[in-house]
Length: 340
Image 1 (cartoon, one colour):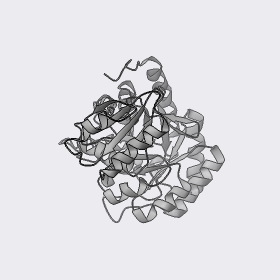
Image 2: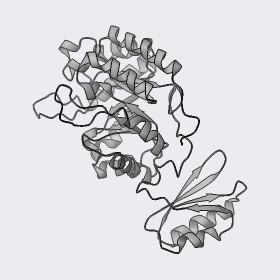
Image 3: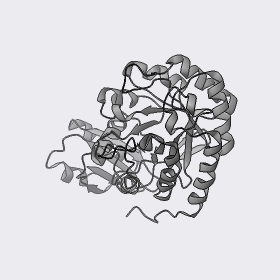
Image 4: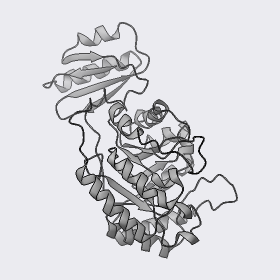
């Protein structure tokens, strides 16, 4: 349920609403918009509570939300959420490019890649310090030493960092170094981890699970938001189908669907979905044309020698060409006038 307040609502009226909600054992989540204030009511709503709310001072409308995700829904927050990280604006009209290697390997690799992707137009540096791998014998990252190299690359270039956190015990450590914490596809339904990142004051990217529906994905974001962290970014990274030529199938339709259902920014990951470097650019362009707010691209100075995901990584030259085409597509795409 959401309670829509009048434009001239006083602080006293808003506090009275909050107190009434909490007295019923529910949780109040206040969203301060440009034109109005909306109070989300979270919990099991009593049958008579809607009528009770409509009679309170300052209330103009009470709307029951049928979707199980409340805070992530566009009903609760009609305007797009904009997240600013350094010079990057995620959720605006210009797609934000997050680029870098799948995994941090050494100082030269990270610094050279950071400088190359920044020169090409990327505004956020990606790199994995903790790596979830299908095989326990694969390279699983450098841990905190990798985070330190990411910080060094940030100092050299000024690019903010996005990197994955895999365990609740690592959230505090990763948050010391990263500007955006990433929840990987395999952890999308790790609810303890989602609860933990909901308590931090930094943006969180939630990747779609390998077989997750839109609703399950948005409910994962809801976990983070219910903890108090409203800075959530969604990432479509491909879902598992019957085709084995590509690693996964990137659901391009997820971009416009999520933009209709939710106010949260959505980016696409053509690297993990395709698994092949020569498919990354065409799938990236399709995602941008569909309206994605950004892309997550793997770039490596020498993909043949990469310790992780070399076959899907772009060289510096190929990343330059991708950026040129992405900018061309972004310059002509048009956003809907309204969400409807």
